[in-house]
Structures are given as structure tokens and as C-alpha cells.
Length: 271
Image (cartoon, rainbow, N blue to C red):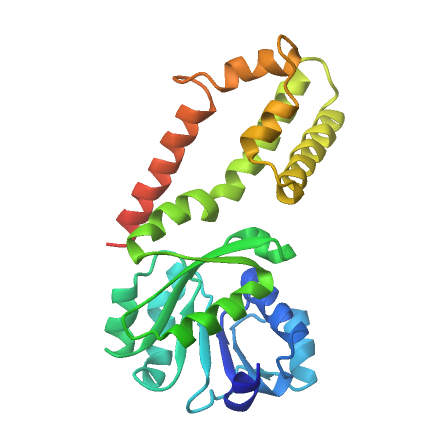
């Protein structure tokens, strides 16, 4: 954080994702007076930080070390012109905004601007996210390292071979939490159909999914091995998996279609 504390960091957009990252950076040594937050509706937490030295909606420093873009896609057209004066300089731009391509940023900020595009997911809000990153041609290895350091404050970071993989990442991990939340809904509804009270079915479903996720996170075994370990031949789990693993109607086919639909939509939005 030494370089950032000397030159400053600008966070454009401080909603749930931006706040989670800011909290992580502060815990890792980011000085309050080295942080600029630009947000039209700052949370009480951010306002409290401003009272202690954080720059809130102030004039940005002339050449910050990093500008991190965390605005919603529909706000991007208004946000980018604000950043144009910082393009083509020593500032590294890192964006976690969905849908906007590297080419679009380069068109707004100017050729030669160093940029890292990132796709985090919502578990970043509890420090358990995973973020995929890819740099443009101007981004140096040091830029990639710095982006990874910043984004690791909210979870794991992986590097892509190229921007062409971003739509698939969005479809798997970016949108993936919603698939898991719907699994909880569907599992609880299935429990109700078998005679459980709705509140008990939801409690069982939530605890089962979150507990299994934590086990998958901690265990050295693969997901397939974990599945096999809890499946007795001819038992109740095997009966259920016979339905869920059906090649045409089960999870594999449904999730393949779902991920393809999300990836296709991402490609459309990026045009």
C-alpha cells in the first residue's frame, strides 16, 4: 500500500462491492487520507470515514496510483468522462463494472491507458468472493500484481488468458451466486411439497447449501469425490442423484443451458 498511500486511490462508486473492497484495503493499511470516494449517495459508514479523513466527493488528485471503477453499468456513460483527464498517464485503472469492454474504456480514456478489467462476485461482500482479471496491452506485470493485491482483499483472484473468457466467467461465477440462491429456494419448496413447514424447510435448505459449500471450500477432495462419499449405493441420496444427474433433464443439462444463456447475454451487452 506504500505507493497508493503516497499517490492516492480513487474509488468511483461505493455501493456494496465498493464498500467491501474499501473495508478490506483499510484493514490492509490504506490510509484514510489517501482514499478518495466519488459517490452521489454515500452510506453512513462512508460518511463516517469522511469525518475521520477520507476524501468524499472531493476534487480528485492529479495523478492517483489507482482509480477503481465500481459503478453500475447504467451509470458508466456519465462516469467515464469524469475520469478522462486521468487517462494516458501513470494512473492504473481497475474496473469491476460489468458489461463494459476494454475497448470501450480505451476509447474513453485514451490509448496507452493502463487498465485491468475484473469480474468479482457478490460473496466478496463477506470476503469470500472470487474475481477474474485480465489486463489490456498497456498493463504491465506490476499492474497485474497490484490489481490482484487490491482485489484479494475480498477473496480469491484468478487471471484469464484473455478478455474473450470474461463472458464465460460472468456466467459461471459472476451470476453463479444467484443460481445457488435459487437452489435454496427450490430445495425448500421441495421440502414443503413433502410435508415440511415452510420455515423449517427453508432453515434446512439454507443450512445444507451453506454447510456443503463450506465443506467443499475446506476439503482437499474434489467435488465429485465429496458427492461419492455421501452417496450410499441404493440409498436415498442415490435415488435423488438419479434424477439430478440425468443427462437430458438433470443439473448438467439445465446448468449448461443457463450458463450459455448468461454468456450469450453478456456478449450482447458488450457490443
